[in-house]
Length: 231
Image 1: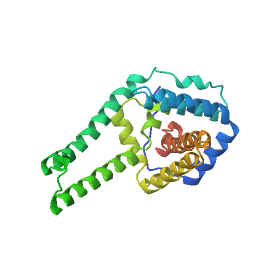
Image 2 (image 1 turned 90 degrees about the vertical axis):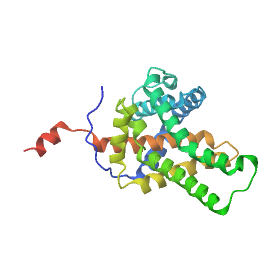
Image 3 (image 1 turned 90 degrees about the horizontal axis):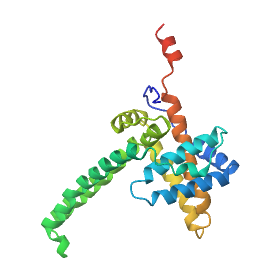
Image 4 (image 1 turned 45 degrees about the vertical axis):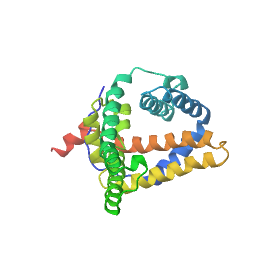
């Protein structure tokens, strides 16, 4: 059942999510590791990556609540169509964003190895910057979309985007820094000859889970609180 939401900017507790993610993983390393491995394997299947991450978030929520959970629960395709169309729309949007860039490449002859003029090069550089800014903007403003669709069962991508957009208001820098720090900690596993990656990748998902959990808890519609505010 879809949860009623009361969208508002959230209080983004950067350090809490990292420490909570570490503590949960430390106490439940093996099941979370196996579930993460299942997520990686399922993500190899075309258009199943988002479904896999969604199922992993549900799995981690069960672990967090002390409920019985099996890593194999990640291999659940029940919500495939729920995420398939949104993925197609996002893919189409990215392609549309890059079309003008490739048109510029063709018009300037760069695809044939020719060097464009300084002015054309400047225009292309500015457009690449525009692409980067647009991608970062939608990624950061849509930070909570997968959590809303997975943990709160919101099926409509537009609704999830509108809620996430409000939740992330005033927090774009903090969300960006959080993503950078968590990703950097994940990269450490790769640097350590690949051994540490078995710990750091599950940590990334755990840290993000607590960021989602706290954010969603702040915007859940509380009937009792709402009644109190009206009197």
